[in-house]
Structure formats: structure tokens, C-alpha cells
Length: 59
Image 1 (cartoon, helix red, strand yellow):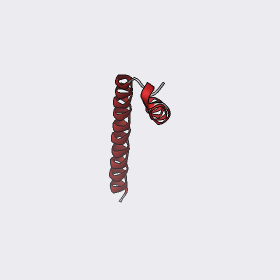
Image 2 (cartoon, one colour):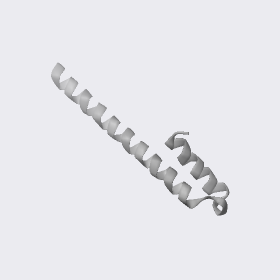
Image 3 (cartoon, helix red, strand yellow):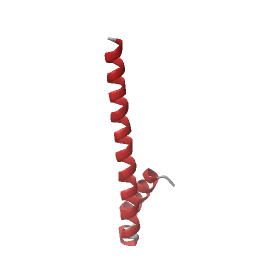
């Protein structure tokens, strides 16, 4: 299961059965999701920069 799916699972469990969740597992899953989102954010910013550089080269 990928990190973002795990985050959704944590969210669902916290919404429906907060008294039954394993807090340590939730924390681990959310840390993995945060890392995945951070990596995606960095990838998007890098792509944005590449496009800016490409546009400047064409100008």
C-alpha cells in the first residue's frame, strides 16, 4: 500500500473508530505520507523551474 493510501486509512479509522486505532502505526503511516507529499511538492517545483528555464531559452 502506498503512503497516501495509508494516510486515507488512518483518516478513515480516526473518523470511525478512534478508540481502536494503534497510535504508533498511525504516526508511522502519516510520516510516510508526509514524506511522499513533500517529494511530490519538490518534483512539482522542479518541473515548474524547468519550464521557466525552457521558456526563457525560447525567448
